[in-house]
Length: 289
Image (cartoon, rainbow, N blue to C red; front, side, top):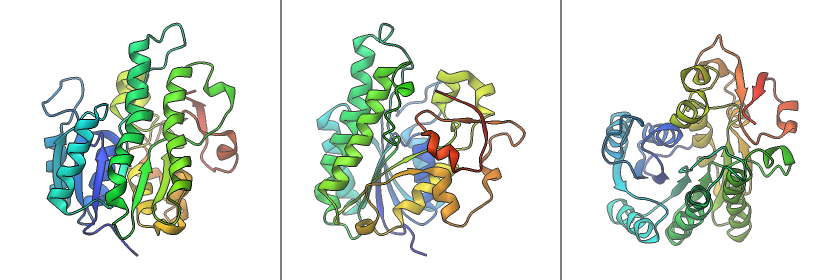
């Protein structure tokens, strides 16, 4: 089976959580990872920095380039991409993982928070992809993988937190459009979890340790991302993948190992279409939405 040995990945928000898990999984193949994230100094509320992530990547067998980069700012994005190319000779994969969340209704969402989500989620995904595409076009099997949901226009996703939904769906629209624009040249896909994933956002925003117990580990997203990025880009594009379905398609049926707490019921993630649950053997008690 192909792997990511010798490939260069540019991963946003890779200092912790799902981004770091994807980076670690690629590192096990011997990949080279550019960690583009804001956190360079320890924060008591958010574990992990670009430097601690680099240590984990090296321990896993990969090479690491920690880069302080706030993807809201074009000069920082361009500088981070150039630093990656200078250090590793090119870019094979972009993982758009960085994201901001605010689960608030219209009147409770001030414009500063709205602008933050748009700047990081939609605009950041577009800008990072745009900056890397000239280098991806020179790569052997280039991929852009964005962690964003299927485009399900059910009003239930918009009513409670329209600003956040717009920002996340903007990331998915980047996937839809760029997959068509670069068809046959770059594999452009999205990946989204079936269930909630144990991350800092879940613990800090959605319910702490009690909520985390009903989540899966980020490893399931990492394994799914790895499987996608090892596919042929020319024939794998324009997909809105669900993590569990990718893992099962690869022949791995041991989903229990991804459970944070095997005894706790799983919670569905936001934005998962009803049709996905209809064809899934996994049962959840309720959804985040």
